[in-house]
Image 1 (cartoon, rainbow, N blue to C red):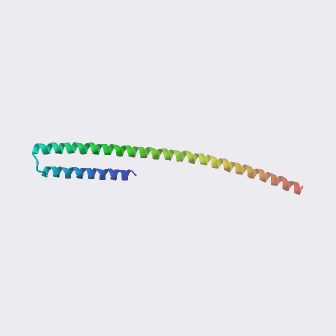
Image 2 (image 1 turned 90 degrees about the vertical axis):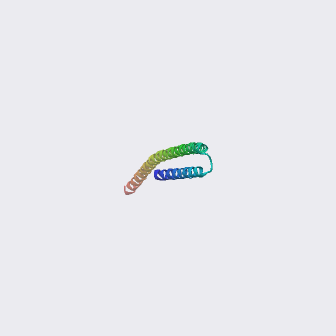
Image 3 (image 1 turned 180 degrees about the horizontal axis):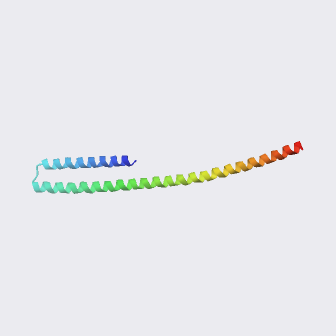
Length: 115
């Protein structure tokens, strides 16, 4: 699971990085004045940085929520398993007690028949 998240994050960063490099080349090759181009590049880079940072925070929040949900589910399953084990133990002991009772009845019945 962690490997998949790590791979997804790497892929997202590759896409963002590729976009930045491509945009940078496009801006550099555009017919504009140097100062104006530098301002546009800086502005674009800041916008891309903010968007990337926001996406990373959203991804981290999603992963944290998912981990919390998994932890809660696992805890619930563990609790349910313990409860089921206790219930099964009670049922088993009840069945044993009933069996003892039936054996005692049969023993008494046979003892009366034999004399």
